[in-house]
Image (tube, helix red, strand yellow):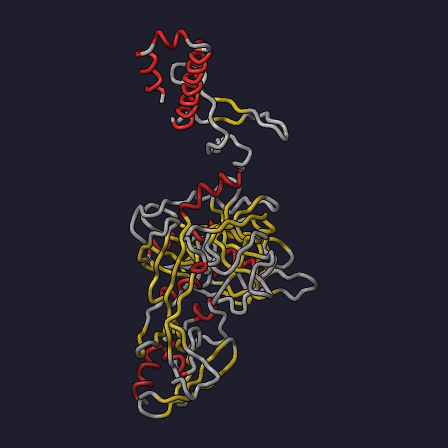
Length: 508
């Protein structure tokens, strides 16, 4: 239209100049061009990228001041449209210490997916063959501790796993190898390809303060979530040095645990517990709950212990458990509950240092020992071949000895493979004291398969004392007697938790 009007103005100048109001028409035409040019400039300002805005730190409630970064030539920047998305600056009040701590660790947190076999037990056993098994999936969490691909998690997360798959926060998956596991501390170590997941900053659990912030990270819902990014819950350190009394001290020992009210639900097991500095101070392990969910009573394994176990597995391929040669019981004198020495192995660090039955143990390396569980926990966290000081009371006076911690005898003993799935060692006086046995001879079961246990009724930790009325004094006796009576009925006499038990079965 403008082109047409412009052409008419050129071809008919005389007539237009003579028409009334021509000057006002020309003025309106020029003003229209100016309006179109202004609109075009505004549109270009919207479309072209501008400088990011910075929110003033002193903004008042209900109002907001916007400062603009200058252009490259030093001139003031062009103000951006209000609808443009903004980047949250590093000094924003939303970037709290918790946000910074989580952002430092969450790339190192992984989901641990496990496939294991489970025996089917049903009310309708008539229709289900005895011993029928199926594959089931379970899920936990883990955290990377180095660039070599080592992942810390819980023993109960990966125990008896047929397959372990690790998934990072981006959904990438990696096949994982089980480097080793420690049932007693509930710690396991996995390995994936190197540099696949960045390691988390590792702190210490030795200086935790009750009341300081605690952050739990894990994957509590697993496959119910559409993404594999971990979940974050917060709370405080509710307590330190918590000892959870075990039903069997030889099996699981939850000692010197970190207590927190940060929600730790099923699936969080194996994930990290952080402090406000974004350092891993624990490995989430267990909850006490009536409903099966979090009720504000969660526990984590101290990271100092978990890292010591990981280093043992990396360096030695197994857990070297410390031992000094003492068997202790709880004192029954008035209100005193300190550990009292019941037996001392003659050829042990404690025996050579001069400790005797009846001595009352009060300190280990300067730390007070208030009961047998305290003693077991404190000794368990002591590295093998390290020197320790023990304060004890004898005849009313306090004395001190220094000795070198040795490895437990049962780990150093020679294994005898009796049958498929059954491994035993000789019971010696040292092993009897180590395991708090009431006998000092026989064959201790160190390993037994699930099938062999189901057939025989035996379990790891049992001490075989006799087979078909023949006394067993060593591991080789078990191998010879089971071979001799194979095909017939076998009656085994064994000790379990201080009680004498009998079991009858048939070996084909």
